[in-house]
Image: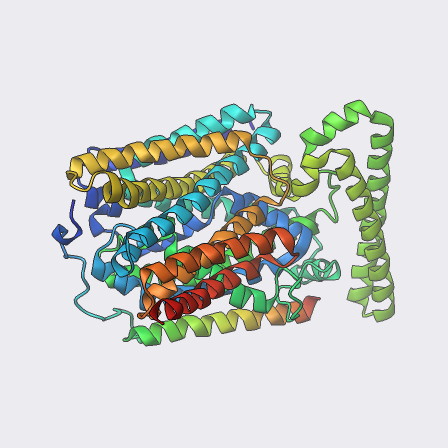
Length: 556
Length: 51
């Protein structure tokens, strides 16, 4: 990065955060602080919901997913439109009619105080850990790539978001997310255009897709019914529906965004905007990763994308690792040649020659992958699990022009700040409304409640920063967040579905059923090798079935 | 703070979508689901074409 990049980065980030603080200065009314006084239009709601869901991890890690595994991850989002329709039709009218500040306040009205506390506790536990990951994830990558100190990056980026979230509340979060999304979209589209321009001049779009398909990157939909496969049409539709329904319908960081609409219509339209845009947006980001893969078939890729980790190992063992790099580079040369032969045969209509060159290129790719695995092991355990997270940022820094690099890094920070802000805002709100005002101080003035909410936001910000400082993840980051959510979301959804649709279930039955179902999910996750997408429907189903059984036992 | 004391100004008064051609919310939801089916169809075609 040069001075121009730093000016673009600092100007964009400080401008957006400063705007949020300035527009919402002096908020003393709890309704305005927690719900933006119910004045948010549908487009801001839609962008705000998307910005909350799309953290920096989405924009750093998802292209890496596309690079390594192709388009299959898009199936995870097939449940989004279904979930949005159900929330808009059933959840939202009830939240608005009861005029609640948090989703768990609704549980208290429907069941009892202990169920409300259980719902709030599950949310605080899951989202508190998640907030740590959303601070840690971009910080680890940016600090590694730029050589910044990790602890300083975590603390500084964490404090910026704590300050403007605590000062401006929900309204500041929604207002700033609108501009952060604009920066993110501008950055990603610019990266895609530059990428296309940098592909070889004689390579058509069809050629690029053919190459990607030849290396199994274009399998967007998998009809397999194997439950061990993470992403299939069925796990996406069913598992994705459950996880999205619980995330968007019961997670306060989402609920807080859309209950702030001017009217039911505005809130519903905001959700429908998200329902329509989510799949194309994720597809586009994955396609960006696939395009980076095609680009690296002609330009030499590094053997390990986490270059800082690799350089440290090369210093210790230069002879063996330089030899590994040389072998990898030779394989790349050979593969590029075979790909050109493959395309030439294809253009000439020589089916046999095309098949022969393609099979040879795939064979070389397998050998290159084996060398890369060897190099990742040599680079240390930390790099082994998440090297794909470094693919996109490595490409950006090496091949994009200055100014655009600053814009892309601003997009990553914008995404980090927008999701963190919504999470901290929701954690502060839930702690204030469902714990502090519900248990400790029932008769508080609005000014006192707003002050309490600000302090709880700061407290959760500090907890998230502390968690991020001690975090060490082996999973790909985007999956780590989704796995964490799937462990808790099923039971949470079960609580809400029972509240909405099973009118005869009482508070005691659902409380004990939820505790038992959560224990079951923990046991399943730690004991059996099943796709994490199935944990949410299992947790939800167990919670509902057990609540019916307990209720029947109580009544008899 | 008591929940009952809060203003109920956000309670919806009408079910109009305000969208041309999609007058009821049922029609809006159906349109969203049709778009989902179209997306899955297009992605399946892309998979078949290039895999």
